[in-house]
Length: 613
Image 1 (tube, one colour):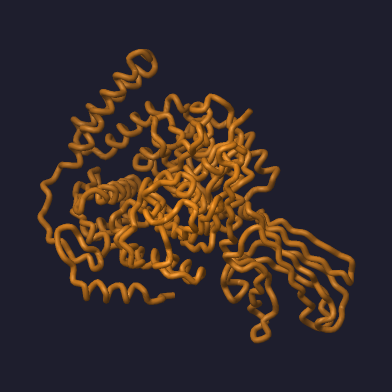
Image 2: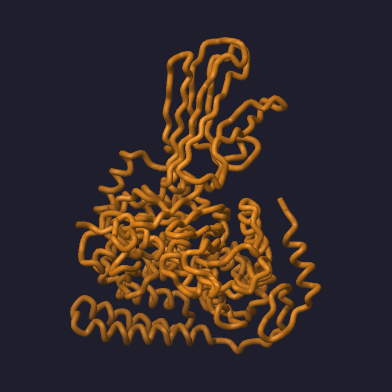
């Protein structure tokens, strides 16, 4: 019997879990780690690298390597890697395929089905693309789960004391605010937990905001500080600057001041960045971050004081400046990230156990809501050129939901009724996401004499079915929303599945060796010292020889090579004496080493809280 796994398909990292021995258990990859970078690199010979080895090639081979493609799921964006063209869902399929292989190795049995998490604010196109990615990877995907829902499920099921007030009983109603801030997306949800029920009350978010944006802003700051011309740089140099920005951001989770260093043939320099600098440099990101928090509270008619628990999920929540911003915004001190990298995957693993009908978990019930409003276009009497949006299903409606409305012909002698389906919150139809159309030819008659019954049915898996019928002409039409321009047909998915089986993906048991080689190659490209370059080449050549001819001594040689490469990287990053710089004011940020001006904090927050369209 095959197993079902849960997968957190992340923008920056992905991981999988399974219900095992009465609990959700994380699945290690070939490195013995739980996080697999969501990065894919394609060599000229067509070989595909996935995960950690591919991430190393972001700096050395940026044109043939892609990350952060989750942001574009369900769109027509294309990536050209290694001379081939890929859609975001195809790149995601490589990640899913690797996680499937890791799970089969760990469980020692086949894995044929997966529960995959998506941002709550993913639209139907992105959700369908995620399902197609799973199918291409050889997985059956019947259930898509919202990331905040998975996190809430993990918090409730695992009964972790850190998320429970000492005054609350386990079976009391608990309202959680789940702040899911990952590498590329932000989701904010209000979740009510009672008995064995997890009910989503409201969701909001931003699919174009995440930790990657902090990396980009720090990289831009580095370039401005040194007076460099970003457009004139080589792609490899740009990639190295972004990598250094990411490393600096990660270092600032542990220290109040860190350095951002870049050492390559175009740049040999570094600057000091403090947490307060991050607050100032990334002010627009904090402003964007606050909007979905306020919106979700407003939609649920709730104040921060009525929220029992604040759950921080996603790797970007580990940033102390993010935690402190939320403390200020919500007026709460109990804001802390506990294992934010793993909670969504653990929740997916729990749901996998539910779907497998495990005796110790099958009585859990998870409800969900519609993250976007759904409707059709209607005539705008004031401006016929701009049809209005008529809402059939309002956002935050509990799922599954089915609603019906009656529409009539809008003009005398009208010969057609065109029902265009949209998703979004805009007043005008054109301001929303177009999903599809149903068209009727009708007999000509006076305005309002012909009735069209329209029913929208939206299920727990995010599938929208539209039924329209006109009794007068005995005609009925049905549409299940699939946008063929942005995705693939069922036949194309089958063809891709066959094609993917032929693609050579680096074997999991060779992944650690490939990672060491790519790490060394990246440092070779970065180094300006000929002696260091020669030594790197010599070590890598010997390592490759041992890989091919001496498997017995390979682990020891790999260890020595890794130590050497790590030493070289540390030496390259320490090539300058660090300049003394005065720390700039960080507005709302209150560091461990000084006090901030309270009035200044208030003024900045008033400015940030203004609605800027």
